[in-house]
Image (cartoon, rainbow over all chains, first blue to last red; front, side):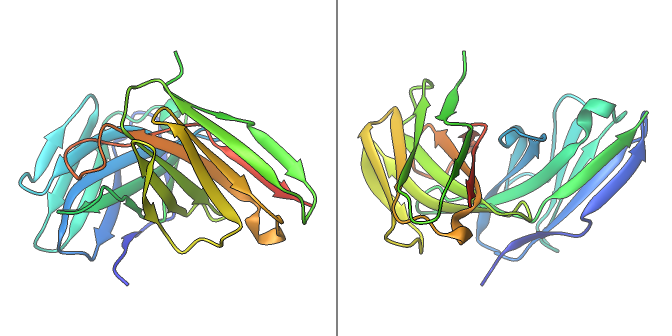
Length: 113
Length: 115
């Protein structure tokens, strides 16, 4: 079946570096994409989202890029901090019907001081 | 202050028992969900309720029965617990059940361990 997946299971960076977490999706009907951050013992926390009619969206220290041609999504975190250490998930929903989230496998981001 | 709250946070029980997990949201959302997260952190939808009505029921065993007394609450009852039910169960909510630019908000999970 169609799914959303991540390239890197673990990403280790130094504090202050920029981090890029990638996600590939296979459902061309996907219309809305979300990045979630999950800290240990917590639930997924919304970071940023993007609709399929956009290719870039910026938040505070985070940017999401969407390339529909190659079905690729990325999350860029500027000036990564130790508090950014967590598992990051991309999720997608189809363009119609009920709101169901399909999650990718998750990438662990480890930030060293 | 908590938007989506689940109880209990931890649940340890023996195989064959029946247990319930409760969820409440104070966001005024119409739609609530249950997800299961396995040991590899993979998150998968189980159920979705909109205004107390079941709208999504993924291929989940009949031993799992959600109940929504009102749109702010969605509980999950599990009968005859099995070892494979060990996981973290997350409740979530969203404004409506239709796709749009609205994220789902998650609780902090219930870690269920079957002995």
